[in-house]
Image (cartoon, rainbow, N blue to C red; front, side):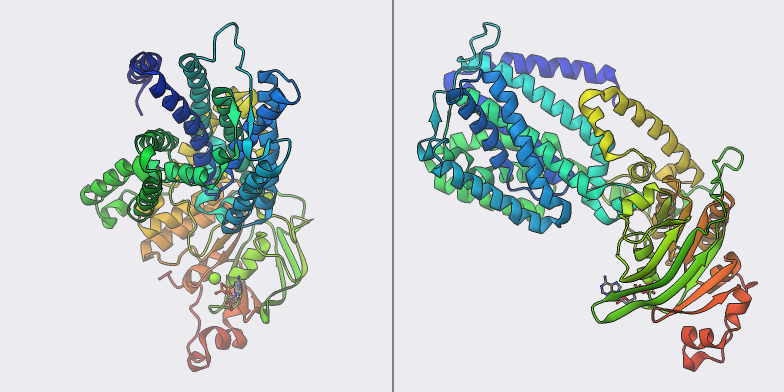
Length: 609
Ligand code: ADP
Ligand code: MG
């Protein structure tokens, strides 16, 4: 990371460049730059909701319009001063952002695209037809914003006002992206299911993304009303929306700087091609399609892609990377142990049934796991093991039956809440956050704050910074314990499978669970890695954590678990100590199949594969 010593001169140059720019521009050029800055703010909001949070939003231009029209209506019809109208304009936009966010509480993102498009079309329809908005003629005569005697009717002076708002918007956006809120939003984008299971309040986070976008949209709208002093429907229609999408996609939606570059670039190109507007539209369309196909991360993503490609050529192969994995070194002395919570079982399930349409995946399952146990769950493929975990961890609602953990009912409770209450899990088909570093992956789970604490971003940013420091210290400690320090800044996809499995366990443990569910943690591991896994699981249990383990590697299950539950076609067919289970004829039959019923199951003493 570059230190302030290199950053400071750079900052001075940027400030001077922004200051000096108007001196080089004629009256028309400064107008174009003023428009470009407004689009830049609009695009930052779009980048936050689409690129950072992964939510499709086609209503950003409607947010822009709500900000502009509210200011226009309040200043011209109701006689409010410009700045009061401006504040109310942004507030009105946030309210609309919340309204758009409500379907986001329940909907997956492609449907959300349709909902937001509907809102955008409805808005244009309304402003074109309503009386208060002046219909197709729009509203003129918006007053010049007063500012301590500075004449903002001069577009040169207005430029400086915009630069201040732009700088604050950019700084706030970058602050969000680089700290806990942005980290959660990115985790939601990469894998909303896993983010939920690691304690992120997904519905609320989606809404937060829309509210963020609406604040930027409203602010841009207010600045637009003050600059042009006239609003009309054509400024807020589909072609503007398309242009904005093109800006964000071409510039690079995942990088706020990229969004700004795209916005400024396209405004300038649009002005240059103003005589060929129709062809220009077609041209943007073509460029957008090419970008989506060949450079999905946009212009801003190209350097990173080049670096990644070079690194792939240069970096050691899988084998050498695997060798960088440090030993697992738990901190026995200082580690926090989980204290017992009365004599309640860690997990108590009775009469649990889960149906998918006609298929009964779980059929009247009974399961009790006492605190501090390592429980094995085995069974043939398709016997319902993963479904059982999905119901326990809140991803699926049970069709019937009751579930409780540590004496508290957990049926139908949201995954994030279960995680905050001390349940964590891994997934059979690894669900790491693919576009985040290993360190960030673990930090998402480590961060136990609630979405409601995000008021701090506005009122007490120092609180956010302080919490960030603590998290960084703790995450490095966890990475060290799990021997992952060497991979802290890599993305998981670039690492060998065995290491990814270890990262998933480290991430699950970072949320400090009392109950840990591991879904086939040994799948795809080599013999040595299976041995290390056994050591990790034992040490986790020694911390007082109850572990439930789905596994196909019978040697591992037999040597690790005190008790084993056997599932077949959704039913529990046996339960007991490894020796008892291994001796049950039904198990031998169900698990190994008729043809192999002569073959005995491995005994507990057998070494893992
Ligand atoms: P296991 O983990 O033991 O291999 P699963 O729990 O994944 O088994 O699957 C049990 C059964 O439930 C399978 O027949 C599977 O096809 C079905 N199943 C699992 N999840 C779903 C789902 N979301 N929708 C429909 N069927 C499902
Ligand atoms: Mg499974």
